[in-house]
Length: 158
Ligand code: SF4
Image (tube, rainbow, N blue to C red; front, side, top):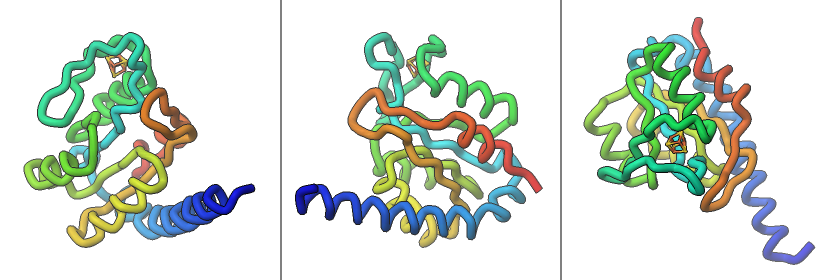
């Protein structure tokens, strides 16, 4: 394995350890937060871009519910549980803006390890409870996630 790849892997591992620790630390508080005070952030790279006709507005994608990607399933669950909202976001900047406007008590974030690491740092400063589920396949498009894990966290309740 080359040096660059080795360093990348070691960084990823350190993010993974940090995220695992943070998830454990905040799981109970997340479970104690009513669904209606929780937001969900999903990365736009999870869309099935070969068929997706979601329109972009203010850094978010508005899903037209074509059922061609996992976001559709997550969105249905979010609505069923009466979560505050789900946003398909283009990047971190818009997340900060939405948090300022919506003032959630807790957030479930789905993203790559690096973004999860950054989000935990940012939300800790703002005293917002967070849970994070990492992508199982990251990249710029056609990324993937374990739906069972997402569903489990969405359903956390004490
Ligand atoms: S379900 Fe929504 S986000 Fe997924 S491909 Fe269809 S329109 Fe796009």
